[in-house]
Amino acid sequence: MPAAAETAPSYAAEKASAAAGPDLAAKPAEVGSAAKSAEVGSAAKSADTGSPAISRSAADPFTTTVRPILSARCGACHDPGGKMYARLPFDDSRVVGSHPEGVLRRLKGGDRAALEKWFASLPAEIRKD
Image (cartoon, rainbow, N blue to C red; front, side, top):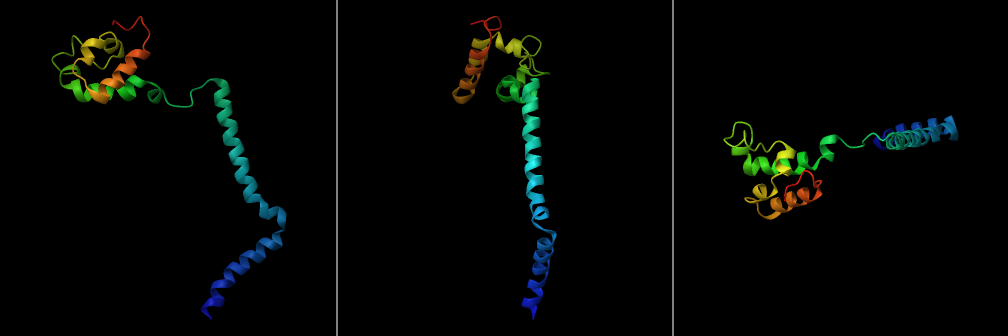
């Protein structure tokens, strides 16, 4: 008897969807595809208008890569409150970019490679090699 009770609700649901006809049964799939089309359309629209698809901080390698390295390795002296902050603040990308030799002096391995890559991407007028 419990087996018949378990199958009864699913049978009733199948019977209701069959009675609704094939057009109504296909609606959920159509709605899903329409929503996907709208998402694709809005993505294309933002690309057409030139508005950035990713946030500014994610697009800025100084904020996402360089700043965390410098804060961890050099922050005690070069972050606000540090003894070198007044002369060489490492929270300003222009200051860091204009002192590549000094900044790289104390870095090694992957941290150094990441900063070297960032320095290489800077315009020549910012870099002082």
